[in-house]
Image (tube, rainbow over all chains, first blue to last red; front, top):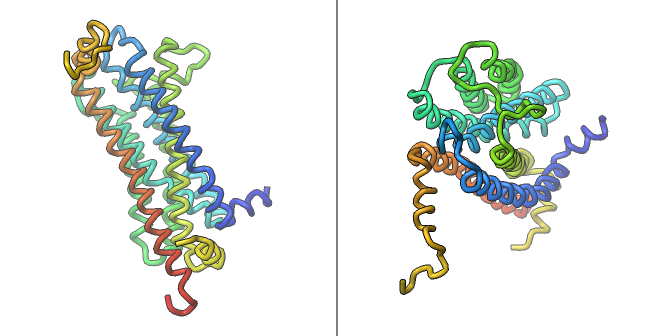
Length: 247
Length: 69
């Protein structure tokens, strides 16, 4: 456990690992994206109730899922940073925040463009939509805090505390469709034993979830490397790395 | 059809138009996909450019003799 911590807590190790993983994650992401889009937009049949408008699901559900997944990663690494003072955990949290905010924005925007033709409104202040909007503000608040405090150390601690406290919003988002009356339809794919979708529609959805997941990890590798270099720019391993680079 | 697509089967232009029409929901479907592409491609491109410029800046400084930076 502590050996594992030690390795991942080491900046040069993480920098090299991220550099090695990134091209694979990016390539696999493109593959699943192309397959998912083709199966979802071309092959899958239209819905018998919603017609072709339901095809927004292939970006809306993966983005909404990722908005919560990324937040849980951010809150967990923030907790690790607060408890064990592991700087690389803070790097992962900070690298995740803009990606999570982008996924949340995508979920809100695509939801709006789906809600207009189906519910007749772009927006409604119901539990699901409001808690997802709150998630966007949590991401933005986290990023704003990083820049607002005088020393980077206290900014990192304050933002990490916000991230950990804000995690209570995640179960609220997830269960909002069960706890409150809402226009939003209940979960589509979490009932895998009794899926409410035909396989020809479900397969592209799962592929798109995979593509978005890979997109996050690909982007996380890139952003983590940037933050490590910014933090460790004067370390000896960076100088060695720079010496090895031909220019 | 000179210069056209001679291999296109009968009716495929119609089905292409049908595809873009999205059963009357073209505006909602394609705007959603376009905005998603802008946001996600945007953040990936922004991150890549950031890494490149940070690498250049950091490595250039690291190669300079100590005390000059």
